[in-house]
Length: 320
Image 1: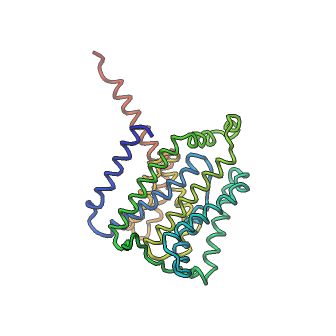
Image 2: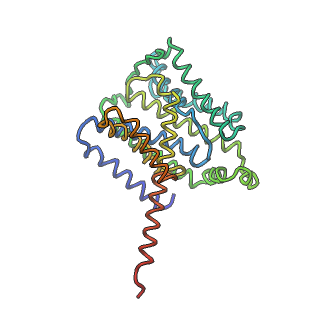
């Protein structure tokens, strides 16, 4: 990771450090925690969609597996929550690895429909297995303890989730600077050209799908433990679309675009409550305007505009 990226990561860490002291009450702390959780989920999804160029419309299903692992295993089988998180991630990664090869034989809208079907199947299983999952009504989640101390306050959870976000950004930045990341970019650019260059296309597709799914499972567990309750809606199609929208709005193939997209689309519904019944219309209009005027996403578009402005300003300077 180059020095500029380290400086950017340091600025992000500083922002996360001072943010809790700037928030006026617990409502905003709770909103900040949900933003950070979505940031980590969308980081993992952007690795798949933005960098590797592979669509997934069922990603919330992996989120649901992690969430219900943290609910079902401690409640019904007496597992420690940390062991349940690991088990959920292992099951999710194994499932993703099992289905990745046949799914990624497909391309375009066929791939989108296959991932959509996978997400729907997971949501249906969670909804129908009422004996374990509580069915459509959901179920409570036992609290998490670390070193004998419960994570019982919003401040505790904020520190834990902020640390996860910084670690995730660092991992993603280093991954993209590695030979693996360069292979993903080549794969996104052209699969035939990647194969000619010696990239094992199937292996890289499977690897990034498993990694992205595991990201989602881990953060599904974190969400369940933080909220203290889970429902099948965590795994439904609309949540998957919401996550994909965060990637697109923030900027595909942009680590910090993922973060901004997650922050904006988590906060926007709260900001639009004043429209009293027109929230959905206002939300859709904002998304349409973003796609019209910033089709590459917020961060890439803003960066491009800033570069153009600096270039013009530099050219206008008088030459001595």
